[in-house]
Length: 177
Image (cartoon, rainbow, N blue to C red):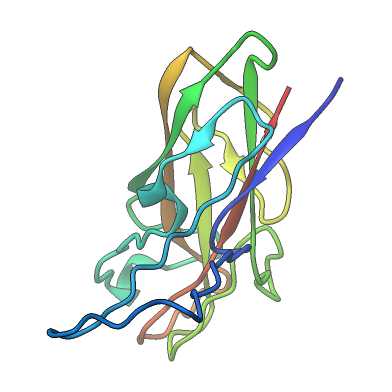
């Protein structure tokens, strides 16, 4: 089984070289337009808005976390796969990776003043995703655009979650087969 991988723009940044000999206009203010992107070998492309997005988990009271494993309400987010062609690959599996929480490595570690809390990801079918591990259940692709839904939530890593900001970053890859 062949796997083709597309890497998110959060983990690979491409730029174009500015033309050194570009002519300056006679009047007006000059500017620059930078074009970035990537040609991939996978079955689909990834919509530009999905490559670099922010998901707000909102303000969650610390009192909601009374025991290890308590979770906040899930917040949905989507990754849009574009121009999918299922003649070669019919399935996609996502892997989200980032800094592991020291107490619960399956979670994403948070930065900020809040303590004893990590971020848990979930696939739309209910599968809890682990940091750095490929999802088990594949996403069955359709030709064209595919919107793949996920959810993120806070999860207590100890009974005494403290208050403060709790932010994290996850990169993702998509493997096709």
